Image 1 (cartoon, helix red, strand yellow):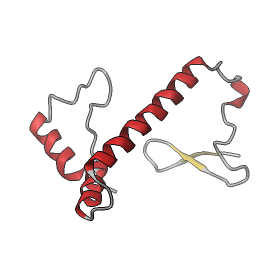
Image 2 (cartoon, one colour; image 1 turned 180 degrees about the vertical axis):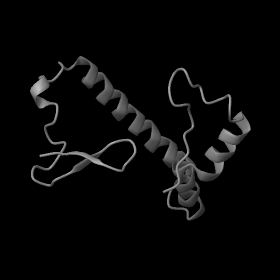
Image 3 (cartoon, one colour; image 1 turned 30 degrees about the vertical axis):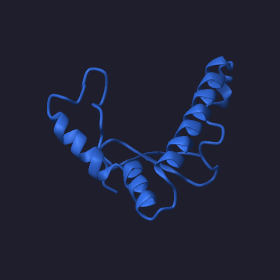
Length: 107
């Protein structure tokens, strides 16, 4: 998988010191998966630009609603931290940053 980060690594790394705006814009126009599928949908006349815009507005509304609900919800109990994260007994190995030595095996 080939990926590209549009933004820097953190707030202290805006990502603009080692890449030009033209580079980022060019990658977004050519390789962005959402733009690529949008162009394919339009080229094959699966939907119109107006229909895609309506879909995008509806999705943004759903996302905004989910964000508002999450912000209003109480924090979960700390005991729920690893609930539904790992499959028990699957033996997931945890490596260090060097990927050379197994640090532990999760339950």
